[in-house]
Image 1 (cartoon, rainbow, N blue to C red):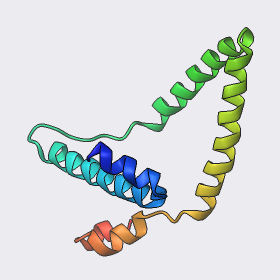
Image 2: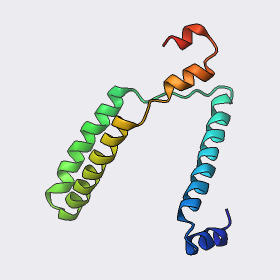
Image 3: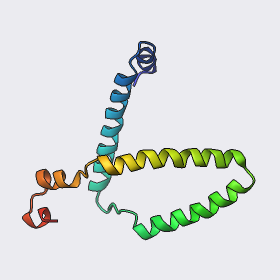
Image 4: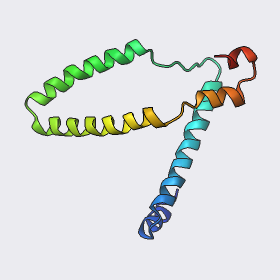
Length: 116
């Protein structure tokens, strides 16, 4: 994307249009890049197991506890991030519909897979 075009959009109040354009382009790059990787022979995509995610969070808690001991700025930033996450993730969990049902309805071709 041309940097001058981005700057002109920003200067003329095109923040929403710019955001929409960038979001669409990034989404396209992610989707096409993932498709290329997924379809490459010898590769596979795995989700991180929940146990690994929980272990990461436990390790993060230990790191945060140490970082907060002698660094008030670190603690202030961390508390701000937690407050933001509490608001936004809570909202998302309550309001955003799981897309898997629609995906299964429209794109799953076998009846057995659709019953999941």
